[in-house]
Image 1 (cartoon, rainbow, N blue to C red):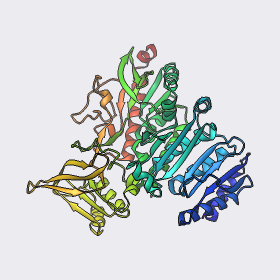
Image 2 (cartoon, one colour):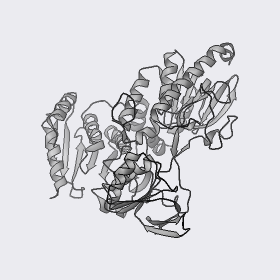
Image 3 (cartoon, rainbow, N blue to C red):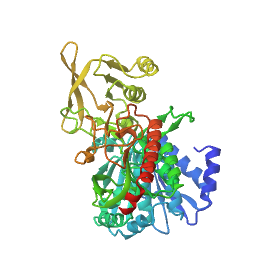
Image 4 (spheres, rainbow, N blue to C red):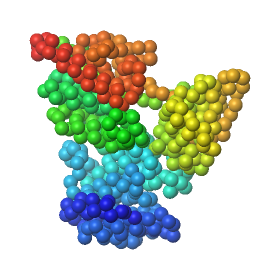
Length: 523
């Protein structure tokens, strides 16, 4: 199951284990069960701390493997074969169960230990989903720390009966004690704040006590990370407010246009960015969203959604962008129930079914090509009379028998049966005729919208599209406030351009602080 190179690496990691770990396997006659058994035995051969045992629980999902601590009586379950993006989740579960310390923040660990209610989490994932491991690993950390908490990862493509029964059409989908808990990206802090009502209040009080920053960066994507590094290198007291470190890059599968790196993946690049930021004295405030910008004594205040107030002498706004929505009837009703925005995450849930991709740019055609290898048929609907994607992508999509491209098509309504998507209607913009498609899923890929709604009541000047207006140095209409990345009016939204603009904005803020040092020191 595991090749020798991986075995050698794991054997080295497992040398740090101090406690026994039981691998409880529940099998049936399927091929996947054979893979689970092979995986468990391979792991057991790498450390004398591991023991493979047939799971005595007759109600256990099959195939599945429970990582169990006989000392702490903790349970972390993998229903399916935890390979692909979830292999790291399995390795971390083994390490944490076997006594290796978690890298979670000390305050989070203490908060987990203090939870005294029984919490049974189930998270439905797809093995190609790059967002899912973050959620799985957060829940596993909780389960490995507190034996009143159980966590189960469920491969939705393998347990399709459960997926259909619970009407799950987007991952990660989390259930707590049998009831829906969340859908989409979720951090450990997010989970703790939801199950511990006093956690957010304590966090807000702690954040509000921080000293004034020289440079406060709002946003943890490529632009924000770059800005923070450049500021810290100048010796400035630097902070980052990040809803999710990495931003949209964390959801990107393949990156092949990042100069000097032939090819990489979004989560890998995000991890590298975060490690680089950690090399410097940067105060990273994870899982926080800015809600308001206001002036304060020659400086600025940022009010967060949890009520905390941070102050700074200068700001770099790098809040990024998100997928644009169609804004048609039925889209919101069936969001997460057939309407999706991440083909890599949710594509496997539509295996063998017809789907549509809305948008004929690079992201839309790339999505169609990826989905065509999973689903029955892909119909691409493009509003314009020509495709905006690169020619190489158009040729590839046109060569695939199960992709149909329809141009001059305006989507008008998402259709459903009250529980899930059943199709859509669109208008042929040439003939004016209304037409209908029968579908199981709709993947929306029509561009980006800046995350700047929180700035609309501020004095900051925005474009008619909601973008932060900046000059060549990244300066905005407010002195000492700079913008960077996809949230600004920069014409091209690319990772490498965002990084460059983050550096520019940070250097602009440094120049501002030097020239206004007397004013900012009085603030």
